[in-house]
Image 1 (cartoon, rainbow, N blue to C red):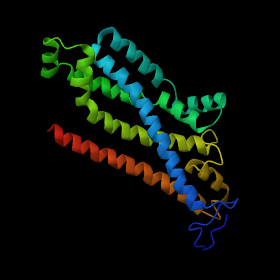
Image 2: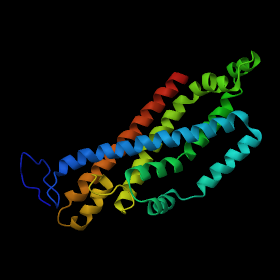
Image 3: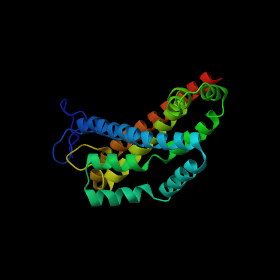
Image 4: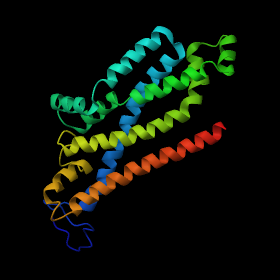
Length: 229
């Protein structure tokens, strides 16, 4: 590792001569790509299950609750490690594994909100005039749960970024030479006593990215609550 003052390398270079600042910047793109893609996949699965269970209730609700409980019984981190070992460590595998195992919070929140919304007057009015079930779900219920869905999405996006960084740190996530903050933490840990910036810089970037996403979610929640009032 070299951190000599050089206008061409703002933060120096790593052990194989790669620009450290460029790797930090590109690592942000990788983390955001994984977080956003995971959020889309898990959000779709969880929203479909949650809205379906909340609207229909009865046996449908029992089946969805069983699926949610079965998912909650699986430790995401261990399942992700096993899947990476089985299918190989790559960006696509990490996104798919996290997307397929982080939908439970979406399902629980959407189910709860849909149960409250299905008994409101405007939903009953739509039923009374003969509107179809897909129409009621898409046009009457879904627009009123989108606020809560957005807030949950920001929380799960931050969670996915942290899980991916942990997997990469252990060698089960994104593989070199792709820049990744978790991977950079792993590469710098053997030098952390002599070159602490090799760990503190990617760690600080990861911290501030997750903090920013969570603060954005909190602000979005306040805006949504103000509109509801």
